[in-house]
Image (cartoon, rainbow, N blue to C red):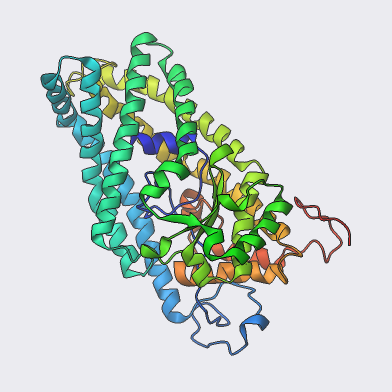
Length: 459
C-alpha cells in the first residue's frame, strides 16, 4: 500500500485498469485498444449489421451491437462500484487496525522478536502490508471474476495467485525500504521529516521506474525481440520513431506474450535512458491491423516527445510533497487525540505507520479528480500527436485511428455513456466515444491549418 501511495503521488501516471493485477501499481480505469472484426450498427444498441467491406467503413461514432452494449454497461457499472467499494474497504480496514489495536499487536510481535529497532521495522512493515492486503484480497478476487466473466482476462486462478504473491513481495520490500528511510528521517528531524523524506523518496522511485522494464515486468510476462517474429512491423515502427525524433533502435523493440493472460491489447514506450524500449503485446498484432498498431504506438510516443513523463513526475511529486506535509500535521493531530486509545507511543512508533497510510489513502481519494484531470489533458494531447505522427505514413490515418477506438470498445467493453461524475473522478483518459469522434474529425491538413505538434516538410 505504501508503494501504491508513493507511486500514485510521485510518479508519472499511465492509465491502467484497477483490475490490472499483474502490476505492483494499480490505477483506475484504463481502456486498452483491442481488435475483433467488429460490426458497426448505425446507433448504440442496434442489432443491424453493416454489410460494407472493412476498407469502406467510416467509423464516425462509437457503436455496439445490442449484446455488446448491454455487457459494456453492466461491466462498467460493476467496475465503478467495485472501485469505490475497494477504497471504502481499505479505509475501513485501516481504521479497524487502529481501533482494535491490531497495528499495536503487530508492533509488539516485532519487538518481542528482536531488540534491534531497524530489524523490528523490517519485520513490522511487511507484516502490516500483507495483513492489510489480505483484507483487500476479496475485492481483487471479485475484480478478476468480473474480468473472466466478461472475457477481459483468460488468466487462470493459479497464475493469477502467483502474480498476486509476486506483487505482494515486491510491494512489501519496497514499502519496507521507504518506511525505514521515513522513520530514520523522523528521528533525525522531527519537524522537517516530511520534506527530507520526500527528497529521499523521489530518487528511489526514479530508480524503480528505470528498473521496471529490466527487472519487474519480466517477472510477470515473457519478452522477446520484436524483430525476431515481426521484422516488417519493426520497420514500420522505425518510421514513426524517426518522425517522432526518438532514438530507439530495433534491439530495443520487444514483443510481450500478453495472450497467455489477457484478451486486451497494448503497445507502449517504457523506461528511460538505457532502459527505454518499445513494447508491443502479441494480442495487439493478433487482433489489430498494423496501421492501427502504429497509431497506438504513435500515441504512446507522444507522451515521450511532449515531455509528459517529466511533466507528470513534477506534477505528482508536488502532490506527494503536499500530501506528506498534510500527513505530518495530521499525524500529530491524530496521535494527540487518539494515540493512547490506539496504544501508539508517538510519531516514531512503528505502528504510527498505519495512521500515515490512512491519511495518505484519504488524500489520494480526494485528490484523484485533480490527478485524472491532469492525465486526461495529457492523453488528449497524445491522441493529437498520434494522429499527426502517422499522417502520410498510414493511409486514411484519421479513419484508422477512429476504427482503432471502435474495436477497443468492442472487446474492452468501454462504457458508451459514462456518467459525468465517474468521468470526473475516475477516468484517466477521455471517454472512448469522445476520443473516437475527435480522431475522425481532426484534420488540420485539409483545412490548410498547421498541425499542433508534428510539422511535416512540404511536398
